[in-house]
Length: 88
Image 1 (tube, rainbow, N blue to C red):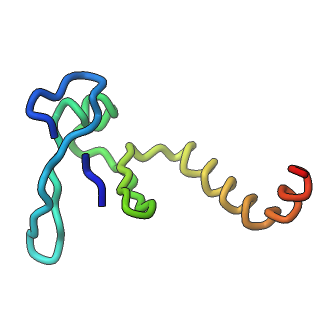
Image 2 (cartoon, one colour; image 1 turned 180 degrees about the vertical axis):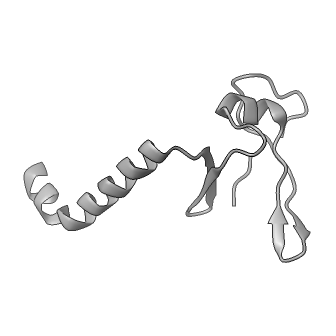
């Protein structure tokens, strides 16, 4: 898992280091307010958490984007051979 914290985090610097800690059966990593502000994430917002290899991606949930990504993933699975043939 990559969760990249500079103590002097500035706007536009989205990399920081933090520790993951246990709370009951859950693991928690706190995020600086500046990072959440940049991503437009506020208290109570839903977020998408995705694992991509050794990287964890957290982004604000967006129904339109989620629907587009589901359609894209379906299309990539359903028509992967066709896309490969077209790319030749």
